[in-house]
Image 1 (cartoon, rainbow over the protein chains, first blue to last red):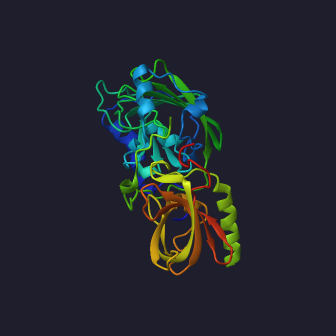
Image 2: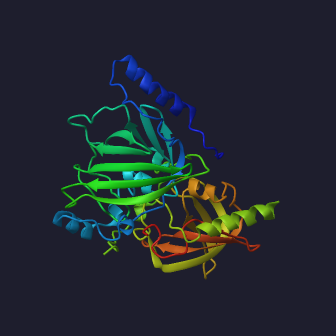
Image 3: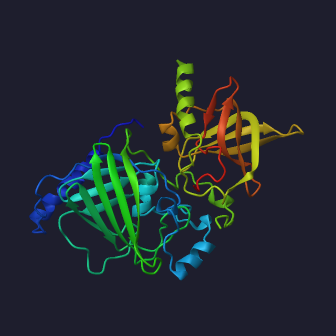
Length: 238
Length: 135
């Protein structure tokens, strides 16, 4: 476990091949960039934010259905307790466990240390599929507006939580994220959550993302899991 | 050399002592912050593995009976960045461990600090605050 900040070679090779293969197959061409976008490559981390209402300053605008569900929620039901994937936004907010961004002209990948999961953000001007399969990390497309990478994500399943506190979402969740490069070591990340089943209107939080002097390490939730047999339903949140 | 390493490790750990653990589960579903415990014993095993590290202590109870207790800490990636290595705690070491007992009464502790016989103290990453992993 040495500490370096270079992407794994296989990841670089795989991602560099994507634009080439797309061009060879007659795929959509990338939109013309007036200038090269900022470089987001590196290992990064945001502050650990287990309760998403804290940076918001209040509870999100629950629908009655979501408010009732939130009152009844118990941390024992957290998908992470069951070693399930963390999901796209919570992966950023997980903090302390960093993530690596690998950026190429047509694809940007976010490699989470948390369970070694990853996101693929296509930046080749494609649209979302018309009827995307619902998955743990959804379908993400991105484009650059000046110094900001804007990522639009749909096609999420309803099985992840937004945080440890138990804020949830449906399969209608639509995420819009803005990764604004502030300087070499800082990104301003704003995520907007839109989900008409759970929230009466879209709401957003902003967190600072800082460059880390480390590399992505191993993390397998199932490797030596011994907690589940000891868990008790508590509902201590309310 | 060894003392320099532990000084650096202790300083690094101190920075994290109040930090909530990054676990795959919340604190309160497994541990009871109204049941703090301090136990001294001999390390029998160290598991520097995901999703939590564990070490085990043989501890004598009041009647002299030896009970093997399990102590849970942060994941190895978190502790590695604080300076921990897989042999930082080894079988045969005698340590005093502080933490909070499991709700179900098992001989299991969410460990926040360990102290070696020579006084060196290290964080296990669980912090010493109530409700770790929640806020």
